[in-house]
Length: 259
Image 1 (cartoon, rainbow, N blue to C red):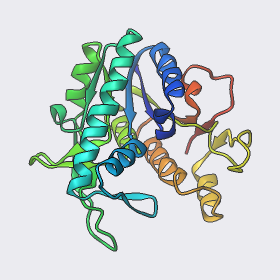
Image 2: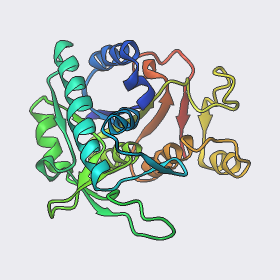
Image 3: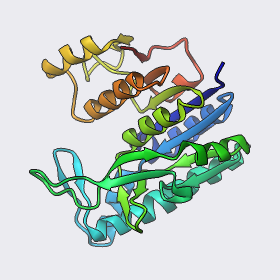
Image 4: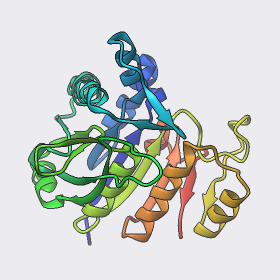
């Protein structure tokens, strides 16, 4: 029987709130067993870019990553946000190690093909080096991945953090029984964005498709759900979506996804 591994992706609004981030990391530190944390940092990157006089260009909620923006993202995701999280986890007795996809060649991507829009230095994940990542896990380190990958030819890419979390979960499901958590400021997938208590507690793929065609989900939730069902279909045992306490409190409302 495979050992359990928990992979947790934390949303940007929680990262930006000092108290909320500390509370989440305390819950994460108490999560038993082997675990991985994944984070982005888009709001912080936008703020830093603005201070540097670099305009942030968004199309349909997705960032266009030119060369200057990639430099900011590398500094913010891989440095400022990642190392602050790692330091806070060390303070909570979690032996964390901060990583990009370039470290130990852990996540290989290719530049997103240009169709209607050229997103610039944005990568689509092609392979997760689960064996190398597992060496860190077996050494009792807790990997903390930021949303940066590479092409094995010296090029870094900005990469969607939800996608990184789901692809890590899929890759490591060859070795572990993986549970994937998407934690953000809401209590789960909501029937009504205006009502935090309108949580859809169980959702299968058919329900997801039906609600998607009805326009029930906002733009930020669509890639999260698409990544979730892709993960379940590819060997991940369970996916949960909810506020940060979902990783330690199964008595509250949250969303569980299944095929």
